[in-house]
Image (cartoon, rainbow, N blue to C red):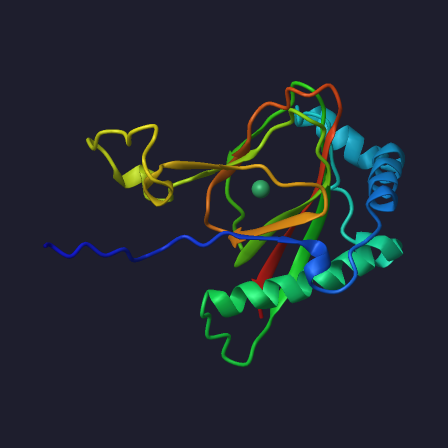
Length: 206
Ligand SMILES: [Fe+2]
């Protein structure tokens, strides 16, 4: 029998925020996201000028954890999740740390999409889910080697999980997903009537 092995794996971390420390109260976190969005005129203007569907605080606010206890609590838990993931990834941190360098709110309305992107200048990126109305979008990850595939045939639609070129994950409210920042991802169109609310973040090595 031939031996076929797998290597150069892509890891995706999926847990409940509450698995490490106290998770913020879901209703309070949602209310905070909505009130930040409502008050953040600079952010609203940026979204409008950039044709960004819904709202993101990415370009306007960099101190959510300092302003709101519920975000402070969230960051404390996320630090632990990221440390656990870094262990799984077998990173040699060489005496340095993975430190959060940005944290932002995303509010995606009905019909909104976040097109395919990756997160430069970071090591680990992730999202925690605040409001996921029924029927809202999954997050879609793309095989990082797709640019090298050239003339290769596409994979079968029922290919086994680790062979697929795209992976869809449907997280629940209170979940956290982590991945390495080079992993390309997108949020397909939100087909639910209600807003899909999430909080995303980046960690760098320093
Ligand atoms: Fe992203």
